[in-house]
Length: 501
Ligand SMILES: [Cu+2]
Image 1 (spheres, rainbow, N blue to C red):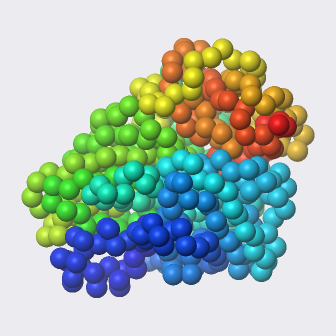
Image 2: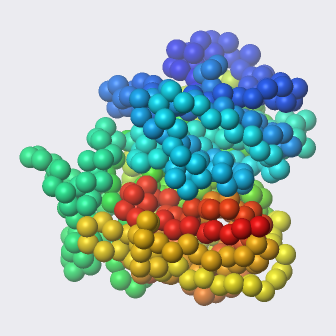
Image 3: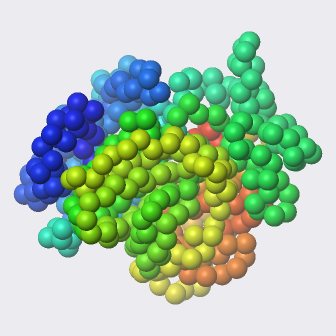
C-alpha cells in the first residue's frame, strides 16, 4: 500500500532488520481507523517510465498514501477533493454504496468541478481487495486509479503480510488521440503506423481474412495466438502501450517487498489496466487463490492465473524457509511484455529480471473461471427475470449492448427483490470484461453450461461466447453495467440496471 520512492526504498534497505517488522507498522490501528474521515486528493504527480518523466494522475491521502486501506464494519467516510483543473469523479470499484455515491458521472451524481470536494459516507459491510478509479472520460488511462483495501477485522491478529499491487498499462500518448485513432479520425500523423490508427473493425476483418500475417504489434504476436478460442479468429488488443506498470514501476526498477523467511503473504492484486488482460505468473512460487474481486472462493492452487481487466486476485503464499527472492509477473496476454514486483527476504539478493517473458503467453480465457467456486454462493433459487445482453460492434469504433450505444440504451428492467439472470452474448471477435455496479453476482453459466461459479463484480465474456450471471436485486438505484475496457466503454459499451425500492 505504501508507495515507496526509490530513495525511501534505498534508505529502508539499509535498515533491513526494521523492515521485517514493517508490515504491522504499515497499517493504522483500529482506533485510528475509526477516528475520522479520510481525505483523498485527485491530483497530478510525476513518475518515471522507461527513463522519461510522465505526468499522471493520483488519488493520494495527505500523508502521501496512494489509495486507501480501511476495515469492514467501519463506515466508508471519505472526502474526495478535486485538485485538478478539470472535472472528475471516482468510482469505488467493488463496494456497494447507495447508488448516489457510486461515482458514475451523470448517472450517480454530477462530476466534481475543479476545486470542489464531496463527502462520501456509507457502511462497509464486507472485506475485500477493491480499487478506486475515475469513471470520467479517459482519465483512468492516465493512472487515475488506486487500491481500496477493506481488511477483515477477524484477520487483524494474524501474521499474514499484505502485499498490495495495482497493475496498469501505460502510454506516453494522449488517450483522446488514441480513441480518435480507433475511431478512424486520422489523428495518426506522419510516421504513426501504430495498429490502432486504423479503424478497428476494418483491421479485425483483415485479420480474419489473413490470419497468418504478423498482425499488429511485433514480437511474438503471431496469428497462432489468436486461434485459442477455436472457431474463427480472436482479436486481443486495440491499443499499443509503452510500458506495463506494477505500483507505477516497470521491471527496470521494480518494487521490492521485504518478506519474512518462511512467512505467509497475502498478495492483493488489482488489474487496474484500461485495456490489458494479464496472466499473473508466480514464477517459482506456488500460491493459493482464495478470493476474486474481493469475494472468497474455494482455494485454487497454481502458479499462473488468468487476470482480466478490473478483476482482483487474492493469493496466499507460504514462502519457503530460508533466504530467497521471488519475482512475480503480470504478462500481457498474447505477448511477452510484462511487469512485476519482487518478494525478497531480508538477505535475499535482488537481481535484475528480464523485462519480457521468454515466450508469448496465450490469450486470457475462462479456464480459471470454470474452476472457481464461491464459498459464499447465492441461495439456490430460480431466476425471476432473465435478460440477454448481446454485444456487437459497428464501423467507427462503435460498441453496443443490445444494439444501442450508451445514451441510446434502454435500461434493463428489474424489480426489487428479484433474482435476476443476465446472459452476455458476445458476437464480436474480442473478449469483454463486463462489470455490474452496486452488486456482486455469481457466474452461473459459460457458453450455456451451468455451474455454481465465483461471486464477483467483473467477468470476462469470451469472443463469440456467452456468460450468464445471477444476482439478487437488493440495492435499488441506477447502476452502470458496462465493459471495463476503457476504449470500448468510451465507444458506447455501457447500459444501466435501474429499479426502485
Ligand atoms: Cu469490451
